[in-house]
Length: 217
Ligand code: B12
Image 1 (cartoon, rainbow, N blue to C red):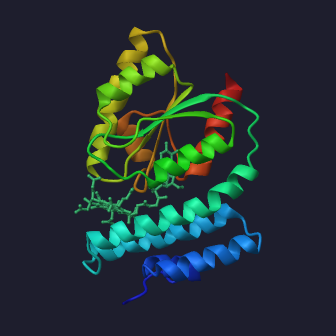
Image 2 (tube, protein in one colour):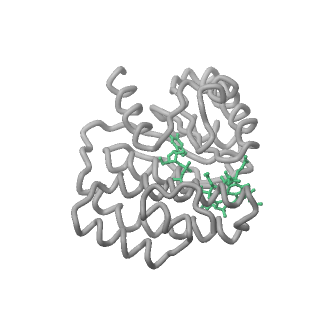
């Protein structure tokens, strides 16, 4: 198998779907006191490589599923460390979900987990959430921030519809909440297209933005 992006050993093991070896290495690095966010970043890099191999036809959907399972197990291992490091001073409510038609939830779950570790109340609507459900839940929960996740191209259109539905309901009910979008392919051009207020490249940056937005209010 060709290695197009052999940056770190952990990223390579995830990319090669070497579950046991990857998890053993994660355990070792946790014992050595490494920053859990660095471990997650390297796994993320491995996941991107899995996606590239899938695009090239070197992996099939089973490879995507396997990589998702490895990532889930890594998160299970680092989550207690992240919880220990939790700063949790501010409190605010964040409504999160993956938009309609998209079932990717690893990044969204990570955003939610890090928010909880930083003292936020998280209302997670899950995956494949229709725009109308997002909008009605926002009216019910009155969140301080709404975060939409989407990883596939088709999600951009759905994010746009979701932002429109959220803004309409917010106007009608006198609510104001900023909308942040995130997911592997999101950039500022997509943010503009979708009409969201912000986009963030990773979950931790999203948490910092939520903290900043709450401080401003
Ligand atoms: C694992 C995986 C799957 C798993 C998902 C398991 C799960 N429970 O989520 C399964 C097998 C289900 C899957 C299915 C499919 N997948 Co898939 N999948 C992936 C893969 C390899 C990794 C995604 C991942 O979890 N990465 C790790 C997480 C941590 O990264 P992340 O989600 O980007 O999140 C980070 C940031 O983006 C951010 N973030 C994410 N959301 C949010 C939200 C907010 C508000 C904020 C602030 C931040 C934030 O925080 C995270 C950490 O920093 C990607 C490859 C890739 N490059 O992303 C393909 C990929 C996304 N999949 C792809 C495809 C094509 C599919 C399928 C259509 C395959 C098929 N033929 O069935 C289906 C789609 C099903 C659907 N309708 O949604 C394509 C999409 C291409 C496109 N242009 O649309 C990709 C890019 C692979 C590729 N290169 O071709 N997939």
